[in-house]
Length: 247
Image (cartoon, rainbow, N blue to C red; front, side, top):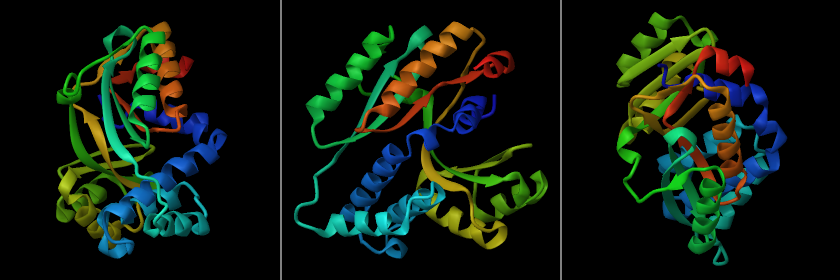
């Protein structure tokens, strides 16, 4: 089962990012502020900030919003955000990882627990599902970047570990600690990537063939992603062709 999954493609086609653009801008700005506060405010000297700015630009965040988020990190009144990861099981026992950035741990934990409970899922302890995922760097290129062999050779030379290609694009994976170096090296050979970020990659995704389960799962993920404190949601699943088409 492909790591980039039909679910990711469905999200893209649904245009959820367009429908919730202001919310997306807020989440990306928060990541920029935290990255700049934790390191150097110069993206060239701060790999995490460089990747955060790149992701923001990919999603059409205006330059002034990006600059304001960096400046905010240097002010004495900058909020103090805590990064927290929640782990649990959604409908049909599908493992989910929820990454949050919050200034109120109790509020976020209460909300996330409520979302899981209302969906028939269960919020677990730290480590209860993380072992089913690998923390890796993911660099995405459009199909127009080159054929599979060309991209594979460029990825190997850049120090990547794995490449998955199909008609829609190329997904390049590397060690989490190598993301900045591999991404930079690939820019020299393939040009600017669409995205370059750290992800949780499912080791052995469960294929969902039941439409009702898929709908419940999608509803839970949408609800989680709509929470202002939640940055990313990753599930250990993929969708069958039939279910993907119906969704």
